[in-house]
Image (cartoon, rainbow, N blue to C red; front, side, top):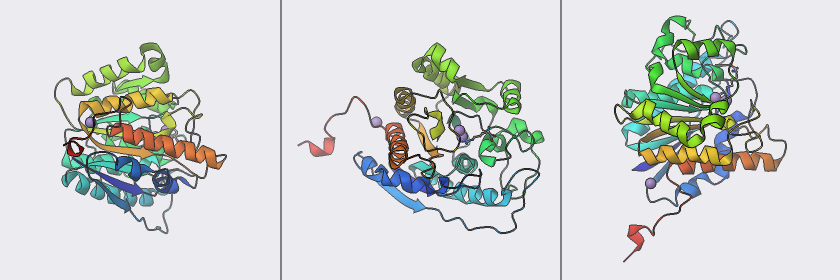
Length: 314
Ligand code: ARG
Ligand code: MN
Ligand code: MN
Ligand code: MN
């Protein structure tokens, strides 16, 4: 296998500036060097470039719909191409609206994929339930077939048709769910683990039930969408919507190790690192290097170490 890294410096799925600098911050924290220690080739495809759209009037209370629609469409093409070329693909955000593009592009190549969404938030508001209007809090609603008749037609989004079933999605790390989101989670019977569930069951059991739910009937490609705000703000302060009481470092790494160990990870997103929001350079550095650890662990970096590579032995 080979790995493709794709940067998406985009921030119009929310209102705070700076998250478009996430890909640079994660690269500066040493991502490519870390991945080059592994025994497979790494292709850094650089960053996509998103043009500024003028006259992108809000739709109801949703800002920048055409910009988000166009950026996610571009990203979808790029992810679809990387997956078709045989790469395990890593998408660096940018805000979480980008997942509309990365998961859709992945699904074009792998229609039977399942989605693991690691986040403090469910990001399943519709434009009508969203308290903020922000599209990074609505990504999953664009994907789900079951929400088709609850979604208004947003300018910029005619390219995307719902492609995912509610049963093919699991959330881990939730602790800030809006009332409209709660109703959707319950109505659709979505499998989710809040921080309270993690406290009760332990992260090892949470991952067992996650894989039972998604993989027990058949092995299928996994899309991991990892919002850095899933981690506790003491570890990941440089992010737009931090919520106290998040994943510990060891819980976060356990999740990604277990996903790696399935051998089924196909695409991952690492989103919402915002270097402008760190209170100090150290806070930014801590958040970005945590993002590197999460990615490396998803791709097989192990706390157990590993043998001398075959190619280096006589
Ligand atoms: N639920 C809130 C909203 O809809 C916050 C969403 C935060 N999303 C994120 N990707 N950080 O605006
Ligand atoms: Mn979040
Ligand atoms: Mn999110
Ligand atoms: Mn391995």
